[in-house]
Amino acid sequence: MRSLWITMLCCFLSMSLHAQEYRYEMGGAAGTSFYMGDLNRNRFYLHPGIAGGLLMRYNINLHWAVKANILAGSLSGNSASSGNAFPYGASHAFRRSFTEAAAQMEFNFVPYSDRYAYLQTSRFTPYLLAGVGITSASGERSFLNVSIPFGVGLKYKIKNRMNIGIEFSMRKLFSDDLDVTQEGMEPDMEHPYGIEGSLLKNQDWYSITMIYLTWDFGLRREPCCGNN
Image (cartoon, rainbow, N blue to C red; front, top):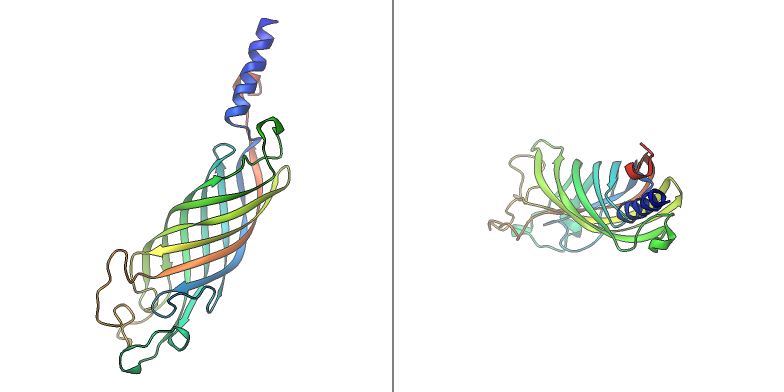
């Protein structure tokens, strides 16, 4: 009897720590992307492009997860709608395709699961994300830069092994030439006013809004419960 109680206590403590039936999620995402910089100072979803890709999560526990993603899409801008006046009335437009590989941490505001009701879990939760990535873009003048993604999302467990979610995130870049697709272009969109940018000033950004669908796999096995 004593060993039975020890086993039950072990299982309870283990579920309290992990409280996930599956460790991993994998799936696809599709949505829209837009650029912000000298050719778009502050308007969200101006000249939107398409974006999509693959993502995978490792669910550490009910509140925390690590996500890796590979995304691709298109970005564009036009001085005619930028709200900026460039020297000598110069005009410019650009279009690029981009690829991103990133890793992010996610924090669920509510313990996320369709099981373990005694832990006050929920099939639905908002979450925050932040991480680091690498972004490359096409063009005669190629682009490769570190990106810092951060944003918010909502996820819902449709059934035991299927999740759907929507996510909005911004990407900060550490250069001002995402909108420079070729050498010798006028105006020079890397320094359109002849003023060098700094780490936090005059740097380009882009954003991705996506809807995703993921499938859970990798059943958790609790050693103390004899499920190895």
